[in-house]
Length: 469
Ligand code: SF4
Ligand code: SF4
Image (cartoon, rainbow, N blue to C red; front, side, top):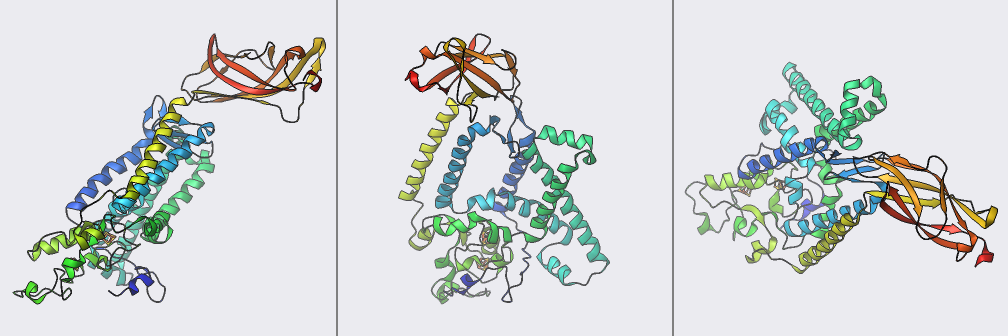
């Protein structure tokens, strides 16, 4: 088979220019299923920042204030290890999925594919028509009809990009704040409006112009395919044994006995190429551009129906299945990834259960040693930080020394409140009689109380003079 298609990507001409793809409008059972999946995912994507669980936004990624909510659970910078473990799990899960099922994520779940194929492209079909009409319009001079269609399309694209940017912002700053900003008006929040318009411009650029280039050039996941896929991975594949037969593919001719002539079932109609949103010919084999969108499966199934051949010349299959008729197998690599995934999920669940709702940190003030006071009292100064991860205020908070006899003196009031989902910080002194110390660096255990109830314990260091070693 000619391999020169691998020397360049399908959307760049020999002169190095962009070859614009005008994919035919897909139709068929997979396209219908993908539509339903995309409706559900789009609804989830838009609704998730507006859903609240116990007062917490369902999903929020406030990078600026370093506050994250995942499935209604608030994560603070102190929980960052959990976010890291969750991300590693995500990567292993996607890797496992890719090894087994190829780029199924790209075709069915990736927001880029869903927005491009199920939102923007469908508006384009509605305004500009199908592939042929789009190509004619593209070549036609700028007349009234073309200007009208272009202005309408670009305006709708801009409005949708603006809406997507707003949803994106709801994930970043929180939906409550977004609604507040909208009701107060954009001029009151120019500092947010400007980034919002920048996001809008980025989304507009991606969906109106850059399009499939994201998957081909920019997306690192697409690039990983080369190392993740093997001949047992299930991908959208052309059954070259069946399609080519003994003597290759050939155009369809009525009343010709193709089997007797040794020709395969592919009638070289190029419909699978015309429908492809990344402009490739799947008959050349698995390629980096293929996002496994299944459009070519549907299109070829229509063709096979029309010539009374069984469907599935292009289908979900592994190379091993096509060559040797071997069915899907759970390979050693998949078992390895599954084991790693199970261990990581176990660790994450353990960490989630061990996670405190209140987090206390008491640290000695940097650069300060100790102070000797009357009656052999040694004093150290500390800063404390208390994080309340709950949605309720914690009242009457105080500290008590557990490991030593001594006193804790607060710089401000003795008891205080830590408001819901807030961090409270301040300064305190610990005073201990030198005779109580066991060395020049004692480890202190301090309990945090709310009223009479211990809500957290923490440790810190206490410095004393060397002579008491
Ligand atoms: S749609 Fe099917 S029959 Fe037509 S060229 Fe593609 S693989 Fe061959
Ligand atoms: S080759 Fe088929 S599955 Fe792959 S991107 Fe093109 S149409 Fe979609």
